[in-house]
Image (cartoon, rainbow, N blue to C red; front, side):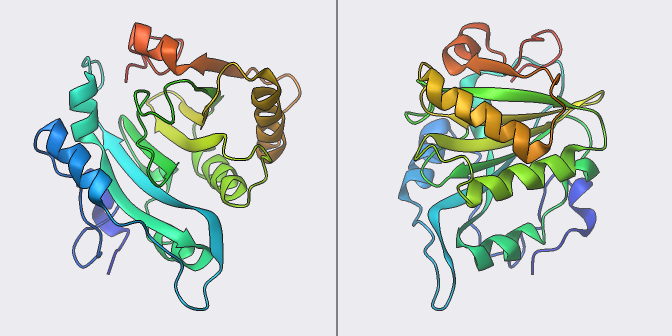
Length: 230
C-alpha cells in the first residue's frame, strides 16, 4: 500500500513497495525513454468515471545551484503513478505528499500520459507555460485547485493543456501550466484568464509567460536564471 509517512525523508513523494507502479529506469536516457514509450496506458475500470484524458504524476528533485543537462534531468524524473478515471486519481492523490510538506528543490508534475514533463518533448517544444509565483504556504491549495481544473476540463482549450508543475523552492514556490502552442495568443490568453479564476488571484497579480524555446536557449525554467535553473 502506498503511504505518505516518511516519503519526504527519502526524497520520494510515495513509498514504492506494493504500489503496483513501475519506476522510471535511472540507467541511460535511451533506456529510460524506451521504458516510458512501452508503458501501457491506464484505462478506466468497470463502473469508474473516465476522464477525458489519462494522466501521470511525476516527481523530480535535485541539488540547488547545480547546472542540469537534458540527460541528467530526464534520468532524475520519476513517474510515480498514472490514472484514467476520477476514482483512480483520488486513490493515488490521497497517498501523495502535499507540495507544502516537501522540502528543498523539489517538483511535482502532472502531465497527460504520453507527454514527458520536458521542454524537448514533441507535445511541448512549440509551446510554453504560464508562471505564477506563490508565497510559502500556498502551494498545496493552489496545486490542488489547478489540477482539479485540468481534470475537469475547465480551461476549455481542447488538447492545448499539456500539464502542470509545482516547484518547491526555499523562498517561494512556483506554479506553472504548460500548453502546446505558444504563438496562439487567443488560447494562451484564455488559459491565463481561467488560471486567474481558478486560483482566485487578485487583479494586480503579475503572471509571466515563457516559451519552451526561450527555456532551451537559457536552460532555465523561469526568468530568474541565477536562482531557478532546471
